[in-house]
Image 1 (cartoon, rainbow, N blue to C red):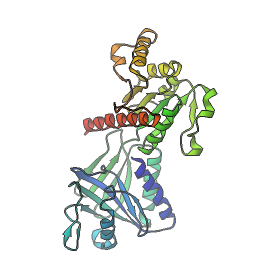
Image 2 (image 1 turned 60 degrees about the vertical axis):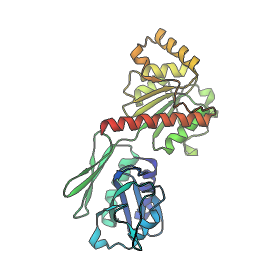
Image 3 (image 1 turned 90 degrees about the horizontal axis):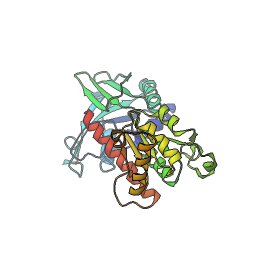
Image 4 (image 1 turned 180 degrees about the vertical axis):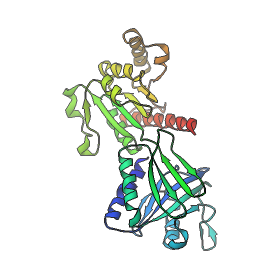
Length: 325
């Protein structure tokens, strides 16, 4: 589940506390250049909007549609952009020509407990699904295995499957690490940071108090062994063999979907030689490491390097998701 959707679920907690009815809309299908993936959320309480369904190009028209909806007749129901949204006799479409299918639900107090359960699952980074009955509007939360997010249709129900949150494991604190942590959180990932050089503690200012991540002070191999799984990316960003090498040797033995190490081509060659000589890594294990890390976009500054790293993770993640589809 993406960060923007977690923010929607967080925001509606206050609406439910105030016992406000509201609309919850979930993207259940896309075609063409639709800018938001399936499972994305949008909410509207008559005064405030949370989330997005089209990146901003059609929200105003859709809100008008919601405000004019006959709740008794249309709850819950499917709605399709580019085919049904008409204003003043004119069809309103996505500028990119894509199509977005929505599940539209009117949320009243009877569904508050269900959405609180959804929120608890989401913030716990668990894989889960929502099953909504299209006739009664009743909904339930089900456990889900670690599979790709998907939408399952049958005659009576729509089931929206949310995969576990992707995790970024950062080895070593640095300026690049800080930017990667910021961008990783913004992309909806769970971010964890490890180092064992406590003398550098004061240099890490992006802690939990500042809205960031606290450093786990331990050996990087133990850190990787504890947290790395098939939803994890392990990033060696210390530029210090004491941190990077230990973590990489553990990472190649893990199920991490992405393993990357920062450094120039010359640094990378020395690192690989060292890992094979001292760590006894095989050629197959070395091939698991993306180094130099990130997409090649000519990045120079810590921010640009972080952008290239996150872009590389997103690219790899989407390829994996396509393979599972």
